[in-house]
Image (cartoon, rainbow over all chains, first blue to last red; front, side, top):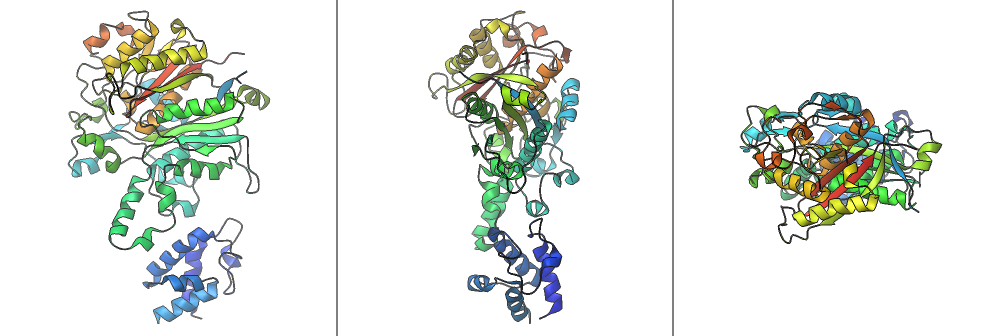
Length: 81
Length: 424
């Protein structure tokens, strides 16, 4: 796992966290919707922010696999390298 | 038996004042909110001045979460949230916690076209084959009911939450709709009002219709001239006004401040027949609407102390005055006081009726009639009907018992409301 990517992803996710979830609650294993309580409608915005930040394009079938922080990082690491 | 309905909260986001204290001062002093708009000049608009509320950036954090502020382009939602949340807090009402829904409180908050700037960006991205780039907030910022949805989520209202739309009648109509709901016992409290976006994509169509005043680009504050001999078009505006309507029994039980009583009103359409059209009112219907409002509220025409007119300055002001005079059977020095807030704010479109009603309620509460700005050469067709001293150009301190407010909109739609100083 690329820690630079992990830190950047945490920063992106931060704004989408509900009031009762802290950025410190994020771990690689965290499920974006079930554990971090991100509104499912906002997942498309997280993807747009990730695309902008890393200058990559994420396809629809890849978005479906991005359920945890780790799985999102896997796609990012693979695309950026 | 209908329930009595009172006003317990006010909020406003007007071109000449954001928040009730600033707006009240502006009313008393006749302060103009019309300013030169560089963007309109750059786009070759005929009319390059407009009424747009001035919102400090640091104010927004009180009304929106950081996530909501990200990519927030719908100015109507910004204005509506400021006015609506302010009115709720002014009424002494609280925001529910995340597990509580207030089923006795609802929202009817109108608009015309919402989120025009957001929609413009969405169109460019879509045409550029980048539809995925629209993000998750294009829909909620461009649906008409976006404003009632944002307010509903902030406040936790569980009664009817909806948006009405009837062009420039919208803001006034929302008050009648909310009144009806409480009077019939379907809700205890209704947050009502209207908002309208700012900007060239909203105002351009009016510029194209040549209904805007193009002659005062160098003197913005003199540009809005309702009832004047040289009135040659309205000045476009924007903003929001909001009122908390509440059953009298609920207001008394909460020991709330009561600004005024809503007696009720009437709404109708001229059917775009006779003198009416898509863009011009049928005078027969206008007079009927005013008379229906009197009948529905059991108010005699002589009891009306002041009128806050529609009076946009397009050249239809003499016709409107004639309609009031004939409907009320009053003229000369026996005519009520009459004023037009648009002389200070321009025509705030779907927000106009709500901002102007907030002004009317402040008049009732403070015992004053605000002066008409830019009012020193009244059209002769108006002075032939109404004595000049009934059209004050300076604010008068005088007790007001009953005030009328009417708005007329494209589609030949009318709404007239009557408000009374609250007495037990």
